[in-house]
Amino acid sequence: MESVDIRESVNANISRSLDAFRVFIRRSPFAAVWGVVGLILVLMAVAAPIISPNDPLKTDFNNMSAPPDGDSYFGTDQIGRDLLSRILYGARISLFVALASVLLGTTIGGVWGLVSGYLGGLTDMISQRFVEIIMALPGLILAFALVLVMGAGMWTIIVAIAVTRVPFGARIIRSVALSVKETAYVEAARGIGASQVRIMARHVAPQCFAPFLILFTVHLGTVIVIEASLSFLGLGVSPPTPTWGGMLGEASALLYPFWWHVFFPGVFITVTVLAFNLFGDGLRDALDPRLRGTL
Amino acid sequence: MRTYILKRILYAIPTLFGVTVLIFAIMRILPGDPLGAYYGIETIINWTPAQRAEILRDLGLDKPIAVQYAIWMKDIASGRLGESFFRGDPIIEILAQRGPISAQIGIISVAISWFIGLPVGIISAVRPNSIWDMCTSFFTVLFLAIPGFWLGLLIVVGLISWLQYKAPIVSVQFWENPWTNFQIIAGPAIVLGLGQAAFIARMARSSLFEVLREDYVRTSRAKGLIERLVIARHALPNALLPVLTLSGVLLGFVMGGSVAVEQAFTVPGLGKALVVAAIDRDFNVVQNIVLFYAVIFVLVNLFIDLLYGWLDPRIRLN
Image (cartoon, rainbow over all chains, first blue to last red; front, side, top):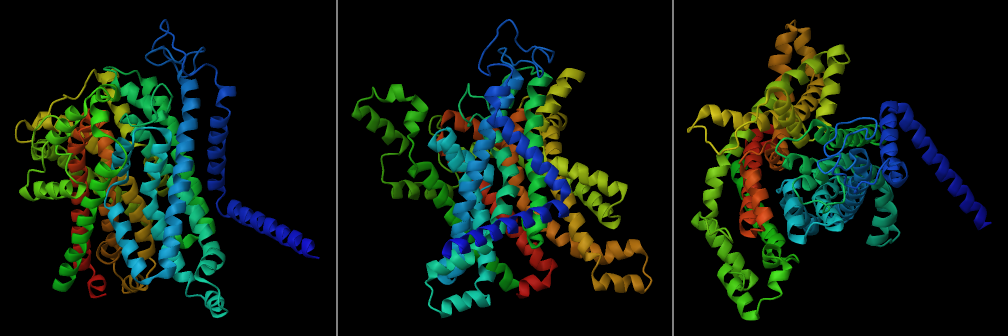
């Protein structure tokens, strides 16, 4: 009869997530729309090879810095590459780096915060000091130094940006763990002799999931900007791979850049950040309004 | 109050010490070879071990890590911060020449952010869901998303295309030529100011919105005080406290952002010096500029903490 139980609990789980989803859409329809925009951007990045009108790396020296027209909707860059195709391909790096680094950083930070909040005492005090030290360095500058030393590449950038996100995870999840560990059911688990690890994993961690999800989305926007800034400053994924920030960097290196060199990549950065920010805000309001102001 | 100040300052010391260790660890212990990065891998693989050892000795990189760290501490204590790896200039000179420009940009941008963000936030909180509130929330959300360096590039390109104007690319201090200096710093200060103003407006709105629903505000209304005084005298002082803290936190945003924004405007500030040092792979300069940013960040937030304790007795007595 065990299989039936499992099926029932899976069904219950699915319907619970569907309920949460409905609550989310009802409470913040506006944010849901922006979530869809974010989703479209992700799909666009995935489908870049199919939907790009041109090869993003193909130069055309007869057609350098051509203004937007019917052939290339966003114009061409200083060595005649199609800007629209470069932007579509650029979305792949920007979005992948953002998603991977926030996932990595928030997960490490979250586990750290969970353990330090739950164990408390000296462990907690020392680890909070560490968090403060990392936070004393402005995010972009910390990432900048890390990428500089480790060398610019997609994975080093992901690691560097992830490091800057660790303190946020550590702080927020710690505060959740601090309040959860005082609840009666955790005390009950301790009473029947569950081990520390088991309590953290089975009883405290699930309570941290909503804040984790919120942290994850809220930081996506910030991280997109950090990645773009690094690429803009010449510490991004190395050329000729197109990245949004890198395209802006190449444009600004020109003595007299044309408006379409600068305008279109930035619009995509802004819309992406906007989508993730508003989606994250809505998610927070729907899942855990208490976190308003702290994130 | 005195114990509170002392406690706060004592708290900041281990943080500052930890920051030096963290920066040193990043710059010297992480995998990566400053010589390879600077001279190129092709050059250094042809060096004889003796050549390599000599260059390492010149740069002081042959000593044990702990000794290198002690030397750095000595350089900091002597106020010279050591020398540029490859140019030999004392790093303190770079800071003295570039620092004031970035400091001007930072201070003016904070002033702009309060001047714009605060009134916007206050009016939105007083008339929630009005047309004004909706318009300002739209702009707030937009400016939270626009990367400063992109806005900077747009301004640069716009000025070139329409007015054929480009700000002078020179390093001029305010006391040397105020007008030239103003042209250099105006762009970055405005861009960074608007970016922060969006955060300030959002925080001011939500914080004042909440305070206006407190009992003591209702009491002051009930005793017949005119609305303007209720807001200015009673609600605003309490609502400003979180805004003040946010402004300190935003300093990190300004410092990080200014690196990219200075690059966009080609302003010869500290951020630009950091980028140039990074291109040169001059790790000693990078290390000290990063430390400088971190120290300013910690000290300003310490100052805000103290200010907070002075403004809000609950904090210092807790």
